[in-house]
Length: 224
Length: 224
Image (tube, rainbow over all chains, first blue to last red; front, side, top):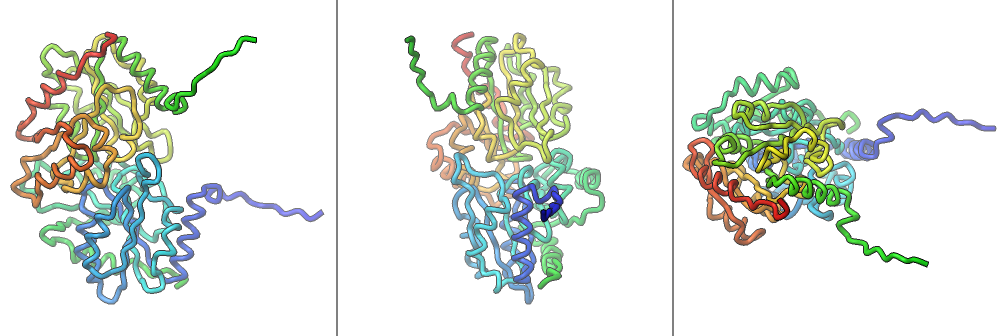
């Protein structure tokens, strides 16, 4: 009797991680670095993308826009002449509150992977569930806005803990807010010590050059 | 042979609605009006509650605080000397992104319902899933902040469509933003024509009196 012993790998039991791994393999094969871009609604993800995405010297970028409904963000990026694909999560009652690996997989045939060096996946605006679902990304970037309050890392710790870069946006509004940047950074370090962070303003352009350089530096997949 | 014909009611198949109905019956029996209070993270729910909850003339109010983790908002309300109960959604991996009827039901024994006229349930900060789950409320109030952009009703339509009042918060920041209130109201009316709305500022107090009066006017349950 031929017997095969199969070792159960915990990740393999999780359908999302299995599909995320397949996505990652496809991205790697095409030599595309992938950033999962997340924030609360209205923190400024799309504006921060508008600021940099068309101007990444030598890096051919594309965007996968995740939204519950509509294509407003994709439309905003259209004038930048980079490939933009819209993914809507609304087939259910109220729509899914996050992208998962299978949704992203369903979009792969619509993405010109061979013509891209970098793909930014703009997730649904939400600080909870998007952090739970890997989609095949190389890196995770989150935006938190100074209008949201200093307590957010403590209230949504998984999101802040699992990201590789935190963009602290709307710093142009600081003179008009009772907001303590040091307190935010203290709370950030409490849940994710030392995570890279940048103070930025999509409005004034402060910090945007550093954000552009960071995006250009996302490592090329080893298999490319 | 005795035959009973059971009519299948669609709502009865939905476990959440069944439990929400039970919650509602318990609230009604105690004569407590219940408001489900929702917004994106950092829109200002807790501050708007701090502004009014201790000062509702003749109305005995309590708060059920829903958070993924921690008790920061409940702690903020502690000095107001109203009953505050904390409900955390984090037993899972990253925590649930919304309250559902069963979570609220689990908190009922901790709530002094017989000593309350009004219970405000502060939901998890999220514009998607909280709108999908009734918890037994009489009314839904949502907060959207002018820092979030004019497009939010179009991007998160279920939330805006199912609420009974929209508080448009942080209007004190309008002079410092490129924000068109008329465009927001146009988008709001596109998804929920004529829904009551108030321009408010938790910081300056603008509109807070109207918000207080609205809260005091939530109708008493018929069965009370």
